[in-house]
Length: 280
Ligand code: FES
Image (cartoon, rainbow, N blue to C red; front, top):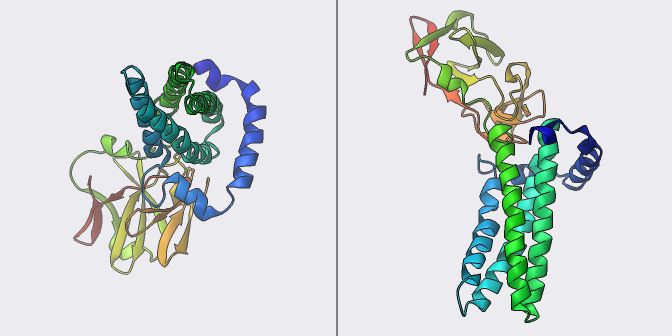
């Protein structure tokens, strides 16, 4: 898998596919929906539960006598539901870093072959060739399992679409940490401060309310402190300078992808005119 991460020969095909995906999925709202912005949680891993569950269930039924009909229905359900899951996956893939896109390309290729085999299995079953349909079903399951293994590497080893900032919380010590004098804190300006010397947070004051938010973007660790504040859907949001993800400054909810995760807000209090924060 490390060789795949480093194999630049995949870039030509990857760059072409990325152009096609970005050119096809143009409307921002559609892209955000597919990233899972509306849920505040990545959508692709949730969507793949349907085809995976249907295909595994079909394989179990294929091992039992008299279950041709329900097995055919499940193979059909898995094959049809894999299509929107694949579109959501491609949408996430197009916003990944280059080494992640290489592995993602192989993950997508394995799953595309698996889907084609399942389509063949469905066609065979519908035409009464159940032996062939079963054999193709097991072959399809092996292929998408390989795809799932590669997808696991992409998520768990390479951190694709996982929240990149939340691990900062595990390094933060307990108790309240002083951040700034309220008397000197400007209104409606992003200020960057450090907690425990190396955990970067951003401060945003609006009247007497101050938001303290982790600075690392949950998408790919972009510096939110260097981002812009924009009003989106009536809320002040910080927009990441790297790929444009936007998070509400009054709650951390993601309102614009490619991040599919909300940003972490930290609790605050004011002690003797000093703004303090602590772990949630
Ligand atoms: S790092 Fe990609 S949107 Fe922030």
